[in-house]
Amino acid sequence: MKPEEQSGTALYWMDTGELEDEISFSKYYKTMSRERQRKVDSCIFGKDKRLSLGAGILMDRGLSAYGMREREAVVSYGENGKPYLPRYPHIHFNLSHSGGKVLAVFAEVETGCDIEQIQKADMTLAKRFFTRKEYDFIAGQEGSGRQDEAFFRLWTLKESFLKAVGAGLMLPLDAFEMTIEPEGKIAVCRKSDEARALGPGEFEFREYRLEEYCAAVCFWKQAVKIQDTGG
Image (cartoon, rainbow, N blue to C red; front, side):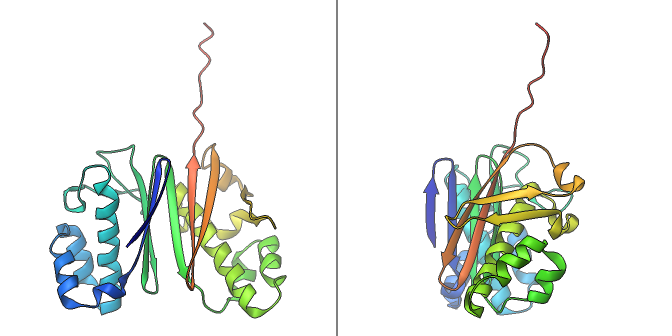
C-alpha cells in the first residue's frame, strides 16, 4: 500500500497480490464494514474478492487521516452511482481498480480517479466513441506499444473526468475532448450542451504510470457564483 500526499489531496494504491495469503485476507476482512464485507462476499472469483477488499482497505487508510475508519463511515451514492459521505461533505473521494491494483483518492474538492491495465488498444472502440482528435492522437503514435499507452492514457483521463463530475455512463465519451500537449499539459473541452451544463469550474488532471498500469486523477475546482446584492 503506497500513499502520495500533496496539499489537500492524498492518493493511495495497492497491489492486491498481498491478499492472496488467506491469513492476510481474513485479517483485513474482519476490520471492514458489513457493507464492504457483503460486497466482497458477492464476488464469485477470488481475484474480484481481493479487488473489492483492497478498495475497502484503501478507503480505511484514507479515512484514517480524518480520524475515522471505514467500518464507521456511512456511504451514500449519487444519481449516477458516485459514492459520497453525507455526514462529511468536505471530504471527497473516489475508488478504482483494474487487473491486480486498486487506486483511491481523497481531496478537498470533487474528484474522480481511474486505473487501467495497459492492453492492446481497441482502435475500433476509439473510433466509435472517442472524438476525432482523440482518435488521431492515438493513431498518430509510432508503434503499437505507444498506441496502446496513448489509448489507456486517454481512457483513464476521460473516466476520471466522468467520475469527478458524477456523470457515470450518462455522458457520452465524445461529449467532451481530452487534449494532451507535447509538454504534458492536459486540458478538457466540453463539446456538448449536456457536458457544459455540468456547471462552471476548472479541472486539474494528474497522470501516473504504475508498472504496466495507467492511472489518472481529476480534480473539479467548482466556481462559486457571487450574487450581486446591489449594496
